[in-house]
Image (cartoon, rainbow, N blue to C red; front, side, top):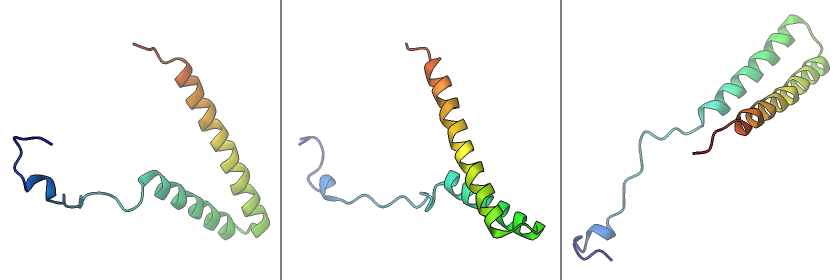
Length: 80
């Protein structure tokens, strides 16, 4: 234990950060986009099965695209 610190300093609980977000921003953006696309396709007159299939395939393709992009940039990183 640090002898220079006061005795009660180690017993004080630190207050919670009030600025911490409740939900991560990227997750909220993805949820809003998916709900917007689903509502838009349903309003356009598409069948529910078509809407679900379109959102599912698009999501799977975007995940694979993001993974490959990250892999490419991680491979080209210069180590110092």
